[in-house]
Image (cartoon, rainbow, N blue to C red):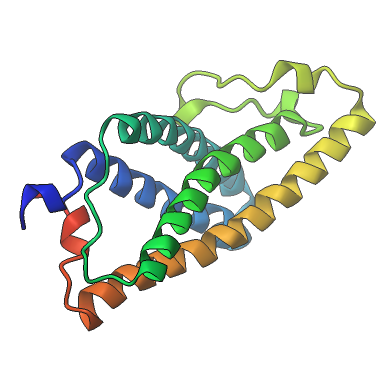
Length: 188
């Protein structure tokens, strides 16, 4: 495959690292807490938070990288609606890469027992919570925690739909259309 039809190595690395982080976080938040013994829930939640903050940092890097490095053009065989759908799916995925960690951080900062459960970034340094949220009166913090918790949850459902469409679209082009779509995002 020609280099002009491939993403840059940095874009590819960021894509797959973020994808792995999303898969791990979905597993930690959606599946395991209900199956873990009580003493393992807090470490799973802390790992979920650490990965979320990492994804936020990587999302910033992805956007900055993309400003300076245009993605390769879509194959000319794609329909206009497919190109438009891919564009908007990517826009929404980028938006969610910011929304999920930010809503989680806000929700965590408003948690009533936040002071009793400091968050340590992958078990190392204490990651700060948003100070102005922590200083709010408790009833307001509870509303913020609940409201942003719902946004975090519903945005996750949108993420699942977008990921399904993203992966489905790539597989459709690869398998049915016989375009080397997946190779554009594989390490060389």
